[in-house]
Structures are given as C-alpha cells and as structure tokens.
Image 1 (cartoon, rainbow, N blue to C red):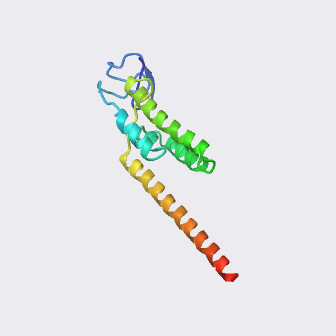
Image 2: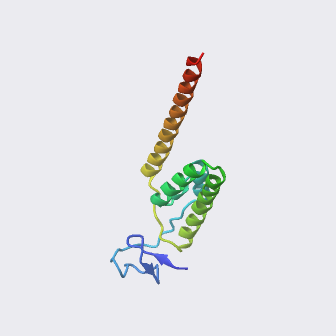
Image 3: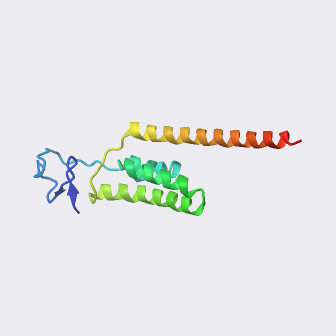
Length: 143
C-alpha cells in the first residue's frame, strides 16, 4: 500500500527511508492512526466535523453548508449528512492504510467549527422567534 510524505504529500515507494526524495523531510516510521470511532462520532454529532477531524477543513465546511441548505428540502440534507458520516469514516480508514496522506486533527479548528455551528443555530432560532413575534403582533393589530 502506498504511503505519503507527511510534509509535502509525495508518494513514497519505501516509507522506511529516512528522507523524502522530494522535500528532504526526515521522518521516522510512525504508527499514527485515526480512530475510526471518533471519526464517525464527530461526523454524526455535527455535520462536517468528521472531515475536520481528518484534517479536511474545507470539505467539512462544504458538508456543513450542504447539510444546512439541503435541510430546506429535507431529503437532500439527510443525504449530505449521511454522506458526511460515511466520508469521515472512509477517509480515516484510507489514512490508516496509507492510501491518502495522514493529516493531524486540529483541536482548535474542531472547537471553532462547533462554535460557529452553535452560533449559527442561535441566530436562526432568534430570527425564527422574532419572525413569529412579528406575525403575532400583526395578527393582534388587526383586531
């Protein structure tokens, strides 16, 4: 199975070599692996968080936005959400197998991602409550 340089992503023929032939990065054979359970739990608890755990922040944002926009029609949102769970698991599995470059999980980005999701949810709830309040005021003003 192929392995990649953790610095530049160059395909390595022999991971046990001491230096990357492309960028010159020295590395030791490590057994860093993604925890598949954590990838699935992250992806299931917050759309896109599984991708952020795998170091794919842009893809995580796309999954989050795709789920949110798709929820307007329900089924597309659920499909994007389910795809996000599958992709988080499968990408972690590929990283463990050396099929794609391993990327570290960024805890600050994960926390920021969750914070933005919470803030967005609060804003949407406040908008819905204020819209409902205005509708009620408009209905009572007519009497």
